[in-house]
Structure formats: C-alpha cells, structure tokens
Length: 342
Image (cartoon, rainbow, N blue to C red; front, side, top):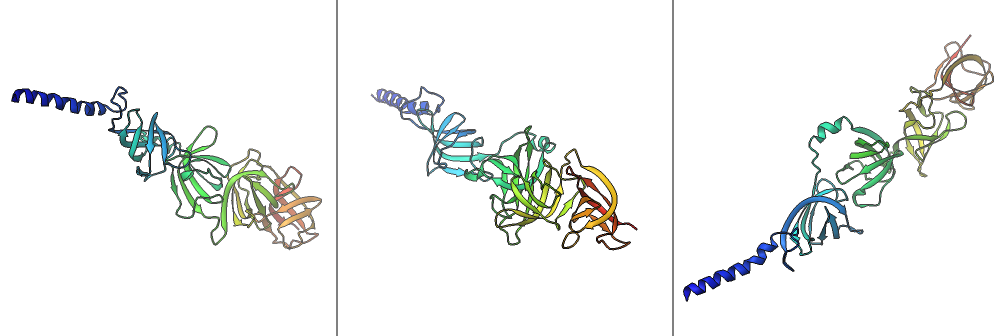
C-alpha cells in the first residue's frame, strides 16, 4: 500500500507542477495554458504609447505592454517616447501581452558612438520658435528657423531657464541631409523673461529694409529693429536675404528685438560690390552722424561700424569727403569708411 501511495503522490506532483512548467515557457509559446501567468523580462523599442499620458497600453517591439498606476517607471536619463529603448519586467498573459511591473528607460548602445559621431557633430545656437505639445517636448522643435529632432535620448539642460518659446538655446547634434539636426544635447542659455531683457537670436534673414540697413529686418519670423546705434559686423560682406545672422539685443513687449549687434555668420555668395568715390556732403542726419547722408547726389548709409576719419576738418554740409563702402542694389552705399579730404 505504501508503494502504491508513493506512486500516486508522485504522479499527482507531476500533474500539479506541469501547468507551471508550461507557463514558464513564456508568451512566445502560444500553446501555453489558459489563464496562467509567468514572469517575463525583455528589452525592446517603444512603438506606440497611450494618447493621454503613460498609463494604458504600450506597444514595445510588437508586444502589448499593459501599464498601470502600480507600474514602476524609471527614466533617469530621458523621457519615455516612441523610439526609445526600454527594459520591461512583468507578468505574461496567455494572449502574449505583459502586465508591466517595472519599465526602465535604456540608453541606446551604438558601440563606437562617441568616436564616430564626433566628426559629424554640429553646434547651433538659436531662439526657440515652436515646441511640440508632448511630454518632455519629444518631437520636432523649430530653433532659429531650423528643425531640431528631439528624442527620448536627447539630454536637455535647463539650469539657466525653462524650455519655452523665446528661450535662447545651444544645440549639439548630428545634421541630416535636409539640414535638420538630430539633437543629442540641448542647453538653455538665456530666459526671455530674464530681468535684464537681453536676448540672442540666430536665424535666417527673410526681409531687409528697402533702402539701407536701418529699419526693420525679419529674421526667422521675428522682427528685428535696427537703429543707427546697432553695430553691424560687415566682415563677411553686406547682409542679404538668405544669410544666417546672430542678433543680440533687447526683447520688446511685443516679442520683437531691438538689435544692439548683428553679425553675419554665413556668406551669401554675392558679398556686394566694393565702391569708392569722392564728393561733397549735401545733407546729414538731423541728429548725430549715424544714418543717411547725401554725398554728391548719392545716398550713403552710415552705421555704427563705419569708420569716420575727420582729421582734416569736421563733417558738415559742404565738406569734401572720400567714401568707401559696399554698393547696394538700389545704388546706395553702406559706408565702411568716410574720410575728410582737402
């Protein structure tokens, strides 16, 4: 009788543990038992997320992952977003989906990333013009007229101000063929709501005044007020529509910028024809010397970078001068140097 009982108990034990062994085969064994759950762990790429936050059903490497309020979410180095790599731990359901107990954001492992990417890395500064309305601002930003692709692996540093439209940022990343940038790091450098009101803008010239450089420019959709006191760096030639410029100035209540300094950062190809001529001053600006002069019937634009040499006499109507500068399309001249002649 004892032998019979022992055999019966052994058989019962085998039958008792068999479903557990089948369940441990995991969700990939679609022939598993009904209603049984087993611990599962895998690493994959997020393909979709719930429309309203993180609670709900995720798709990770073609698996449905059920995320609840009890799920532990760890994302120390970024944000959960489509395309991010994650490690999922949880309980597998009979349909192959997983009830997540813990999800950890993982950094992409690209092997020799540091060595390969350095050669292709670019740095770009500009003002944020638009942001995606997503958690962690994952998606496409527009900064200084350029599209910046931000992913969960992008490191965002906001020590000097919040991420917001109008903030000046520095972008580190890899350029694409279309000119956009895959950002690896974004650093906020200035807050447009700062106490000093200073702002920097890097963007593309879209519009210039019809005559001269004094007046309103449009740089990457933002109005830039250029006055006679604005210092314009003409090292790369005359600013032209399509040039990339860096503008430093003060932010106005309407969002425009009064420029203190403008520097052309990319040459436009046609730098402007250099010209030089002599003539007599026929008219001067009503206040000071910065502004528009008339010299022997020719309009001369005098800016803060114009060198004025009056050693042989003062600048006044009737004074004979030599003008050197850059010829504009309308026939006027932006003066680089004016010297009084005998």
